[in-house]
Image (tube, rainbow over all chains, first blue to last red):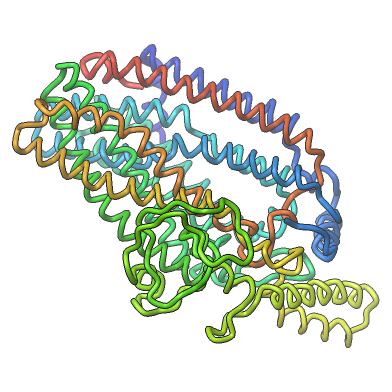
Length: 71
Length: 514
């Protein structure tokens, strides 16, 4: 593991212009996805709206036993 | 609900389709190019020829660009599961949890460990260790695709599970039934080999461009030989796995097969439509024939679907209205049984809360008895089982045509290169170059057939899409749809721009480490 870690460290020290560009792109993308999109636009519906698994299963069962339109 | 808005369901569908299709622009190249690079590096290690090292490093750089830009685009799909498809996520959580956890751990350790050696380790480890790392990255990437495709296979053919009415979750009872389900195995092999074909077309196409530009002849020819051999083998393999997939679809999703073939009325000795134009784009009932024009291969559909040239292949009308002679149950009857299952589930829960053991046991027994029809209970009318016919039909036929075209292309390219005539044949070089997008198109069409063709189901026969959706406002889903459309388009533009720059720079400058 230490050797792998050192390979990463050396690799980043001698990174090429292209490599730098790609890593920057990766970090921007991950920031947009995990910080902006996940936090502000993609809350977990059941986790946000219900506190316990019991409440969540009751809610899902209620949805399933309600024979509404499902096209 | 009752009545989740249709527009919400459609926007949720559209958003999932958009993100999945963008994600799938990056994935197939990673799957295939990783193996092509590993083969090239093997040739370098075997021969000691520095030209092979240069070739390997160039394609490895393009692999790195695609990997970097594509990595974690699939995570968006998991966000959507939790937000837009909460009922579905809850119900399948226990089935998907295990394979996706395995994927996470395996992919993380294999890829993050060996990708470091692959890109940064050329001068730090021995040739053989480096080669081993490159192969392990290839196997790691493909292995991570296994788990998500197993999950998708389960949605097409839910097996190895039991629905727990107390928790409203499907629980895995046999991991190997899920992992080794014939649908999952065929889906995995067919899908990854489509990635191999996409990557082979990519390498052959770009190498052809170099020859057309009168640059890098040796580099281009050697790259073409590796990619065209790999592509030819993969495209023949894809035809075989396609045959396996068609057989499984016939057994497990006969409505999808009928839509793929635009078959309204079932028949024995059914022919396979080689080329055809549909009369109506949407299913109309009842209809005798739905083609304006078609050329059929006699008996082939019966043979492909049932391994018997005289077998009866049910059409959409048989599957909707039933066919007593062929012992096909009507959808109306399935809807009635589905409603019994839903009512029994409600009665079970009520009896349990009231501690009425007798009713509870009787309801549970009834629920179990009719559970296989469960999802039908939510359908409004029998015709709802029919997916969009024209989209499924044309996607399927175009995909198959392209598949056979790729076999021919790889064969012709190899023939010309061994005859030393490829560089003079500008037409074939141009065709090879313009076949790069066709590879992506064919691969996406395969997903359209698989996913559009199984509508209205999120989980085949058990959960229609409308019941899988969360109660959100349509506006929220529309907003995130456009956010994703912008984000992924920017990523795609970045990919194309950076790739093009590297390709134009060529293997002398374009083979730098990432």
